[in-house]
Amino acid sequence: MRIKNLQRLLRALARQGLDVQYDRHTYTVRWANQPDAPKAEVLLPEGFPVEAKALKQLANLAAVKHPAGGHVCQICATPDFHPGDAGVAIGSIVETSQQVIPAAVGSDINCGMRLHVANLSVEKFLAQRQQFVDLLKGDYFFGTRDVTMTNGAMRSLFQDGIMGWLDAILGHPTGSIVKSDLDQLATECDRIFLNGSMNGHIRWSPAELITGELIRDGGLGTIGGGNHFVEVQWVESIVDRALARAWGIAAGQIAFMVHSGSRYMGKYIGGMWRDRAQQAWPQGIKYPTSRLFPLSTQANPDLVQDYLQAQATAANYGFLNRLLLAELLRLRLRQVYGDLEAPLIYDLPHNIVLPAGENWVTRKGACPAYFGQPVIIPGSMGAFSYLLVGEGHPNFCSSASHGAGRWRSRFDMTRQGAQATAAELGLTGVDCITLRAERRIEEAPAAYKPITPVIDSQVAAGMVRVVARLQPILTFKA
Image (cartoon, rainbow, N blue to C red; front, top):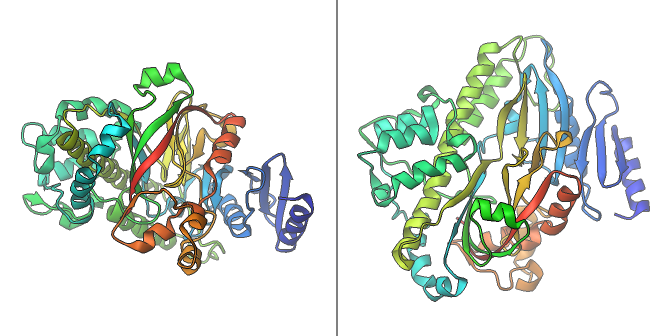
């Protein structure tokens, strides 16, 4: 952004009550009438849009505090920063003391990324592409997938995540999983954040998902809407050879990346706790203008623990949903191309509250990037995706972005995109598998920020280091 335009914007924001400063790709923001709130820091590459709505949402989040105790200690945002539909900007990272903020997680609990690789060349993959695509279209779009679950397996999933689910199905798997290598799935738990297992409880699950001997849940093994996808890629280049070798990734391999979350389970838990947090607000105290209601460990200790347990229940479901999406693909890959190991590289969450000593860190559209931990950041379906390693930067609460971030809203893309050419939308050469033509336009590369400066700015800031770069081949969008 040019200096004159930036100065004009900062003056306009100041007239709206926002104290915004800029220094070397970093914006700081807070409400001028909230001097006790911490300043929120936003890392934005040169030329990226500065959206007033997103800055206001971040300032609102920084000011959240509970009358009985509880406040924000630190708050920042990653370069994919943009406004969120539920009042919390995407890319927000907030550390809180003595309070948790359910609305800061929202209803897409444990939306996250999963990455596998396979020793298969691009040429061999493309030679049988159509058969592979037709099979997966059936699984992802037409309901040919079979993710039937026993009552015991479903209950174990909600309470103990993937580890509990695996224990429950050993010896008597059901559905498509009967064809899976269960020993491989068990071994791969080491490559899932928190082993894919959090402390949940069946009391937070919808009754229909724990009733009956066999459960056919329409949500498991589904991609979902929005920016969620399953993408086949190839490893275009290796940057950190030592780490790539240790993690089992090599140039030229086929890769598949899953971006999805807890689906209806997350909406159920997220909506429930948005309402409960508001109901728990002290009587006689004016509602916060932001409508972001925290739960205080001083006033609501039981509610805080209940929310964390409920969130964990939905997160467990999200971990298994990604596993099943990937496993359906891996099974079809083996059916078409022969016996391929296709090992997991890593699986990590985005929208989630995690402990940080005596505090909590909530990430909304951002992922953990602890020192030495794999990090997966996708571009659009027409751009590179990246495998990186976290640097554990304390100024960013050991976090990184979850993608490139939207540049244009879905409404804007739908309204204007129908008249645009494929080249203008960035869709030239993009292989998007979907049943709805409007999805190609809503999620076209032109809707997203360029991924390269998003990655470069985080590398320069010491948040992550690049391990490998991946190029899309085809993308499934529900």
